[in-house]
Image (cartoon, rainbow, N blue to C red; front, side, top):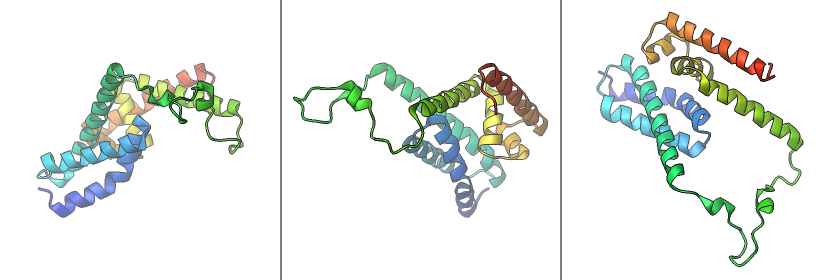
Length: 189
């Protein structure tokens, strides 16, 4: 059974990687922080009495489930509510609303990159993300753990509950699939 100190040390060791993983998925710092905190609390509350060796696998599964729960809540919220406050004028209530003015942004030439470069980069990034999302679940999970979270093969295998050979196979197939799909879209390294 894990002691309080072992549990605390484990949580300290994974907090940054877990935050980075969650941030990649949800693209919102506050939401990512909430997901990581909820995952840590659930691990401590429900599985704090498990052996220290089981904590990494349990935490990865809890983190994945909390992330999925967040997406489900967002989907439900977005389906039920339309948040029009983003389109409201920041001036007085009686003032005319200009959508283009609100979307013009506040950069005022502070960025050296052109809008075309920024748009192209955003499109490439979204293309890569879309292809990662299209991977089969096990390949995507192995790929993100290995290359985003920088976990080694043994850690990934333990977290996924499979052999190291399976992790290598999933990662190889994910890389091959991503490479072909991105080349087909004209995105080359």
